[in-house]
Image (tube, rainbow, N blue to C red):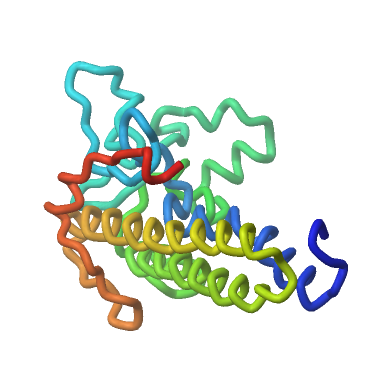
Length: 215
């Protein structure tokens, strides 16, 4: 409301701000994935990161445990038992794959690629659709913001517009890197309803980020 109290501006921009966290989770680390960003700057994706000689728990591969069977870190009683750090009933809820909230499922469980989620999709399909939803929502933010030009001074309108362009590119970068990498384990097709990858995995692995362009 720095700019106006007109509901035609306030309501759409408020919606952007209130949903932006989950949108970022969707295109970066959905379903309980974590710590799969690049070493050093933590800005972009590097799920293939396996830092030999370093602390294991600094490597993305330590956190996602992707293999031919599935993905996710088993923190149940038969795994690392980190779930025991929670009091009842949470330890039982999180420790049971049937009752664990799906937004946390890969944090607490190593889940088979073909595991059926609550909406009927397999885990692999759900992962693909989550990444795609994140990309689509960022694109909607761009459309929403472009409609706000009449309410905002030119300098700040362009600054936010520019940042949303960066976010849109980054969302596709994350989606492609993670899906193409995890696909090497799942061996399953990316659902045809969602946008095709536009990068090659080997090209993404070569990216060394110059943060000066992203600050």
